[in-house]
Image (tube, rainbow, N blue to C red):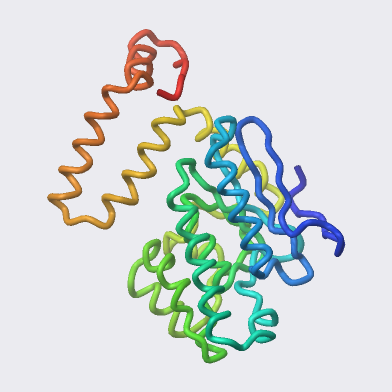
Length: 268
């Protein structure tokens, strides 16, 4: 796989799908529009996520992008072509459902980021469970610059980075570089562009080796406990641990560890 993605022609689908070795790669494919999240692109991405949810062969999902940018946010031209309250409500409801679908997907989702990820594009990165960026990538929530505060991107952003860092991004609209995004906790690591595919592939392969049942249990528990009070979080997590210990894959994993052999997961 090449480090940079090929340009798309106008007759190509707005979302490309690829599956290999348990990893489903979903590639935003509106390069001329810097992969702005049109209603059509969001619908295609939603459909793809709904499909991989039920696909036992898919262990990990990677969200990537074609062309010079990862995602420039909502398609403002499309939105301004229909200046109607009902249309605006539908767009943001659709986007909110999409972002929540990533968190609720029982499989880890990795963002492969190059170029810029701004506004809802930055929100998409923040919504993914993991993210690896090219060291030339840049991030921003620049709505404040055009009179439109990035309120919905704020939800995902503020759950990834510290409050002061989030507010600085939201109030100034300024770009941050990949190194700063790593410091803020928005992405896991930044690598040279030529090494981006290898880094994403390596991370996806490591995650895909694990029990799919355990990944599902762990991801759901992570997001649920994060919204609880401390005592409630411990009570909930303790119950999750008990249920997990009773699963076949936990018994197999422990046995394999003690017997010094690779585990054979069954997903139950």
